[in-house]
Length: 503
Picture 1 (cartoon, rainbow, N blue to C red):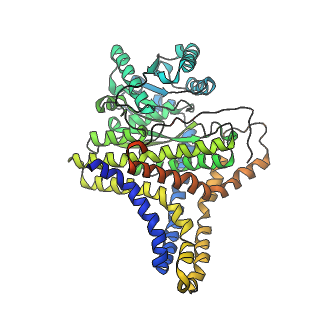
Picture 2: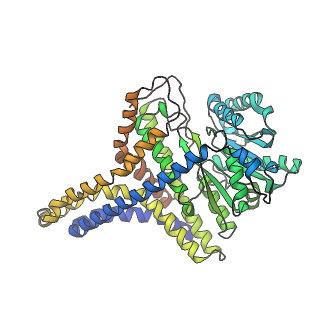
Picture 3: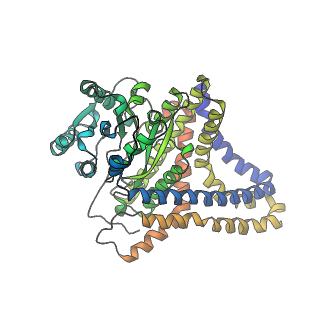
């Protein structure tokens, strides 16, 4: 077995050994497991409070940043730096597959409505040949309506069936980036003066997004060794989503908000920005992977010997919640999307191999990232199962001696009390979930606020069915390898302005 295959075993092995030990130790050592779950629940309570404070901190900063005119700050308040903000160009790559015109148009409307000079925008609408003629017609229609509003507008078509590629976002971005490089070289624009933003095609940016992005870039400690991460709000079509989908969408948003308050643990996700010079130097995005949005961080981190970081913007972009025409199709798509995000575990063997080969990265940085990254995927797959299973497994499997003990009698009461205290996290999420709702449609009444608040009682269900299960499946597939590995699954985009969902 090669070393890379051994690395691929690690996340799945750790998760499965944890699950097996849950049952085995509940049978053999029920008293010890009972004490463990009480301590684990206390740990979870403290962690919930800790994460809730981070969530609130990011929310406060985000609200503050949304009130600032960042273009004015660039123009009047920015102290002289290495770069002049008027020399900075924004290369915006929008990969698309089969998204309808209306969704793409909304994203371009948002770009046009930003207050940043449009003569600094180079737009690349990155289509896929395998998507067929309809998507080419959509791209041409976008070009007809928006192409002359930017400095440069480019449509690229990623060829199908290129060797050594996984068809998906990463391979499309690389094709688009290389085509853009040809144009940039012809224009003779310095790579150091270009920020590249890769946006899912449903991403809508607020008025001042490129103002705060440029300001953060110009004031960053080492801008050419940094990525810049906004907060993904999955709210474009949130009023069309059923309750389960809304809880999942906001849960994802809240996790990324929490990470903004922990920049030392922040990696890139979905829509983000980074220097074009770095993209060229590392050879663009890898074309044989699924998790290109997080892998690009590790490509840069290893290439630059640990001198790479993600700078949080504390500023939102809005994207689509995962919604399909029917409830059950929405649930299926939700699971597939979570499984694809869980497939980010494929970065674990990449970073372990890269850390072994790169002797210039300090051992402390290597140890920090190894532990936190592996622990993060392990917690994703197992924590909710531990919390909701170990409260009763020792009672069922522990035998008569334990079943009639004082510890057995009190275990459900103690764990229930601790978990009730941990509800503070759910209450915080419920309140913010209402606050972050976009402008309400006409049908939205006062009673809907109550429905959108109590929907969070579904959170334990979503943590297991749409959290632990897809994470375990992804890690198991990585462990099995070969035909079990995941390809890139494109999340279908669905929008129906006439549709409303209350429950």
